[in-house]
Image (cartoon, rainbow, N blue to C red; front, side):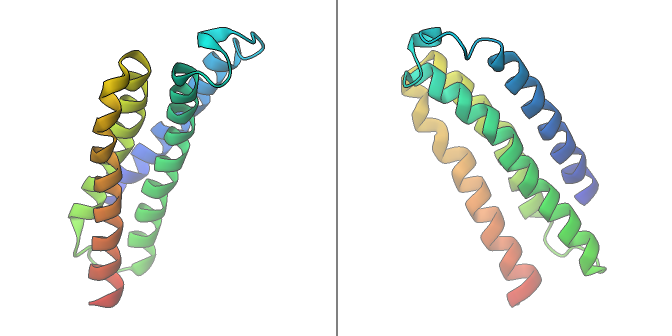
Length: 126
């Protein structure tokens, strides 16, 4: 399972660079997407950085499981981290288009929160 998280981490880094490069072509325009503080522009910035943030979480999971040197007893946290890595930037982009979709942010936040708590419990506290 950790190999999938490792791949997801590197894909997230790649997508973060691509998103940043595309958005960076327009940042010099003061009124692009309604200006710096507009909802749409903030959601695009959040999507861009979430690619990197969730990539690092997936990377940390994969490396930790590998360093522990024993069979991973908790594959579900890895799956939840993958869900977060897919859902967070997706919901950011969707929310930039339709603001009411911001309520879906509970999905990736809950997935990563539960995944982290579950992983800590299973691998370190149990």
